[in-house]
Image (cartoon, rainbow, N blue to C red; front, side):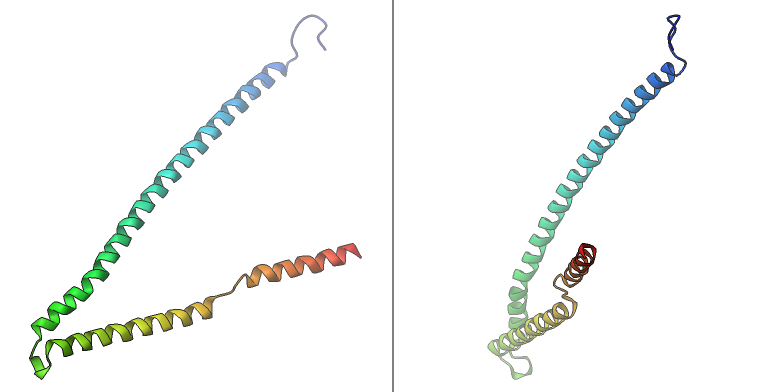
Length: 135
């Protein structure tokens, strides 16, 4: 107790802890802000990379028919197949590759698709647990 005007022994320690707590709070807020800004910059950079890759893929895919036409022109008459025949062969190969790729992608999707299966199972278990708790 303060009978003679002196402060309690722990008052200085409390003040130090209060100041330390304030500094720690400021440090945590600053670290959080730094992390948030870095994540925003990284997301912006990743978005720019994705856009550049998408543009590159579109250019590569649109150039493929042009390259095949050039190849058909170069092979014109080779093996007694005219330019139109080569174009038909290349188009057929691309068509079959597209259908095969789509079919195998669909099969992989159907095999891996769970459709919230685990979440629904967890919800059923929670419902069962709540019913048991109620009784």
